[in-house]
Image (cartoon, rainbow, N blue to C red):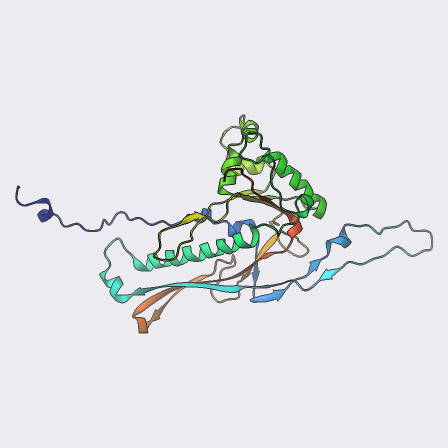
Length: 324
């Protein structure tokens, strides 16, 4: 064997130009995109809800000379409320670990990204639990969830017609036309590869089915795809990843300009009065010394309440596919 050997002339060290981390893209998280964020100075409060029954009937009558006009009133519900729970997570950067770390590791940077990713994923999990589930949306046919027939991954599926039908159902029950469609990742791929959809867009300039193109095709303000992935296994166990949402979709009216007397299927009430919180409900990241642990703590806090405020403004599609 020639001397010196390869192991004699080179000692393996970490590369400083690359490393590997499974960090989900911000665009994969849509919890902050589906419904508007309402900045709130207080952690909890009430809000008024005008009862729609009074606003969709007319009591106007012909008025005879010298007589009083017909009159009426409208109902208010002052019981709805929100409470912005505080969600927190931290990572401690120990002095000894930082001092011994090789390049390209930057534990303060890595800790900030780790905490941020954890907070974003928690918000997405709560969003999916609150909105992308059966039995809560009442704007669909018969006031219940809708199962497409034929289903959208079959050759005879009619997603465009099915969605249009539910748009009219929501409109007839609320006077508001849905403007947002949220699809699970598998539902999105089924729709964009469906023959009837491809036939509609084959003469477009791009000829590629994107979320923007589907929004235009369906005459919606936005078409969003839930692509967040979560590992459901306990720490230390084998990785068990999967999409947060599967085989489901939501058609809903999401008010792009929330304000006084403005309805929406949902709102996110963000406690911006919490010191350091942003106006968009993104929370805060702070760093402080924990001397008893000889560490710097990187900590994230978010305070919000995702509320279903108009169940009749949404139609929920369940079991959209025959083979999810």
